[in-house]
Amino acid sequence: MKKKIIAAMMAGVMVVGMTACGNTSDNTGAATEAESTATEETADSAEATEADSTEAEATEENAEATEAASEITTVTPGKLTVATSPDFAPYEFYAVDESGTPKLAGFDIALAQYVADYLGLELEVVPVDFDGVLMELQTKAVDLGVAGLSPDPKRESIMDFSDIYYEGGQSFVCTQANKDKFTSLEDTNNSDIEVGAQTGSIQVDLAQTNSPDAELIQLTKVTDIIAELLAGKLDGAYIETAVAESYAKNYPELCVVLDVPYDGAEGSAIGVCKGNDALKAGVNEAIAKAISEGKMDEFVATANEQASGEIIEGLLDQQ
Image (tube, rainbow, N blue to C red; front, top):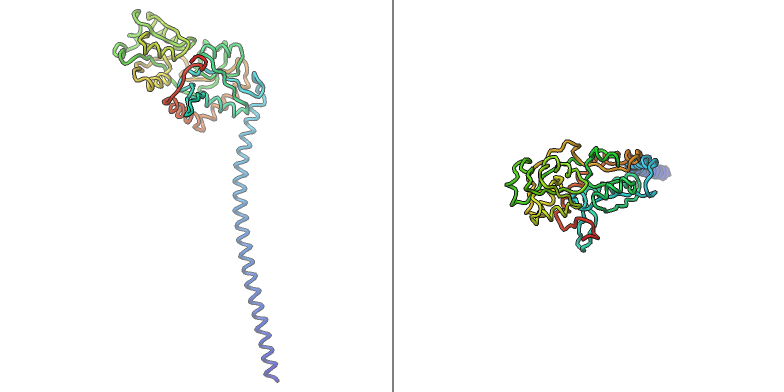
């Protein structure tokens, strides 16, 4: 009898022991699961914090852009109207895509889009001849002029200027057949030669300064100047360096033969409708951001690549 009682007691102890072990196992598993869940929640929390930080930065940038745009008035509400002269590769031109469709391209166009986006405005581009860009700004028919403009003090009566967004230079261009004739700028100052420059541009002033004795031929479009050079009707021409180099790539007969000193501000600025200080401030903010982010370098690289392909320069309705 005692053996049976003892056996029963032993069985009870074993059951209790097994139950205790079972509870310990369950608790350990639960603790492990809880720790895993806590770790995942911590990771999720970290990711959420990072996402919130990124979103906060984006929100802050949008707020800055919104603040910049809030005081700006434009010719057409909600739009940024920009005049350009698409005969100035790699600044602005038409790139022909695979389907044969010409589309406005160039680093000026890319910058104009960047400025419009920064200000929260829709971009509207008005293609005109170069002197038309000056006229559109003078009559306040557009908000901006983006056409490789040099901030010439002589233009300050009809427009304001943004900060410089691209450092450039000036050159004298001729054909390879004539390059030996021009070893210095003194060689361009000869009554027997004809030199070209774009109407309304600072290159006209450069020609008058460096080649006063030469016959100066002013033409509306750079494409016309190039055509006259290639046809032998001009002996040389004054052209902005980046543009001259772009043409020389496409026309091996051309030669960028001389650097031309320029006492004015070296580089290009955006022409801003006179008196629109809020717009000018917003444009300058966008330019500074584009430069600091390396966007301008990207715009220039892309434009140079596009300019080496099939392009159209000048107004499409004149082609």
